[in-house]
Image 1 (cartoon, rainbow, N blue to C red):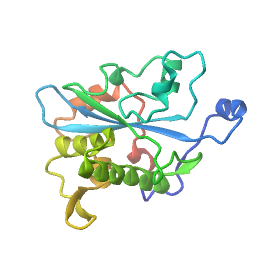
Image 2: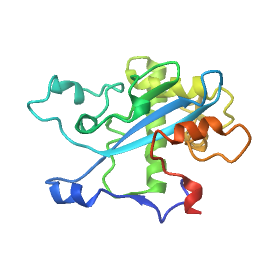
Image 3: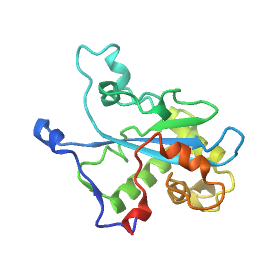
Length: 202
C-alpha cells in the first residue's frame, strides 16, 4: 500500500455535489476467519465518508461517543455488508471502527495510499497505548491483531520495551484473490464484499 503513491481514495461525484463541508474518511477494520475450522484470518477494510447523524436518528449520541463497536451513521443509510451483520465480535469475524483522536483525526479526502497506510499505523499505535492503560475500548484493535495473527513477525518497540505488531503484517492479509492452494476460503469471502485488490494495480 505504501508503494502505491499514484492510487488514492476519492469521494464519489454524488458525495461531492451534496457536501457542505470538508469530506473525511471513516474506516472500519474487520478480521474474518477464512473457514470455521481454520485458524487463518484475513483483513477487510471498509471505507465511507463521515456523515453526522441526523437529529431524528434513534439514539444519535451513540454515533459520536467514540464507541469502536458502533458502525458510522452512514451505514444506516444502505443495506449492511453481509460480513458486518453478525455484530462487532463473533466466532467468524470481528470489526473495529477507527475513532477520531487528537493524534489520529479522520483523514480528509482524497487520500493517497501511502498516507492511508500511515493513518492505519497511527490507529494501531493509538490502540497499543490504550492497551497499556486499559482504560478504553480502543485497545480492542491491538487485541484483535494479537489474537488473529499471533505469529506475526513484524515486531517493533513502542514507548520503550513494549512490543508492537504494526500495520504491515495486518495489511499483508488484506483479503484478495489468493491463487495458492487452499484459497477457497478467500474466494467465499470475496463474493461477499467489494475489496481493493492491490495486485490488480501492479
